[in-house]
Image (tube, rainbow, N blue to C red; front, side):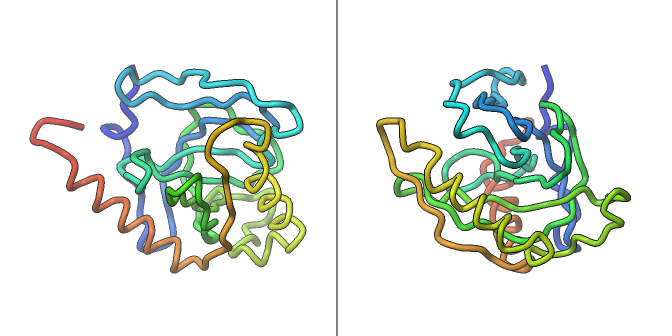
Length: 182
């Protein structure tokens, strides 16, 4: 049983660095979620292949978003990262997203030490508009074949916007802790 919330902090987000844990590798159509009560990763569902994740998907330990889950990350790499991998990531910005009526922010990161890219990716602009269009399209439509709540990308936010959301989610997580809990 792995309790990522006990083992890892959310990182030095005030200086643009977060700790992330990968749930879903880029290219996977498996909706994998970490279950904080059992410490295990579980398969929630299998999505149609046309909605495979275009980017590695995960969460930041010791955060609590408004939807009741850890704050999500989108981790940009050239190759898929395996489920359960812990990463130190540099914040690039924020995807402002709604799942039904609930805010469900996604913090966009790259590995803090990305020698392959020469550490040149420093902001969302460095990823290009085409990358942003593809991510927007995925998150606007990945639940089109599901019955339930609609999804909507509201836009993109800056590095500072992302830091503000991580800060709020870190404080919310701390407020929900009881003495002796992780």
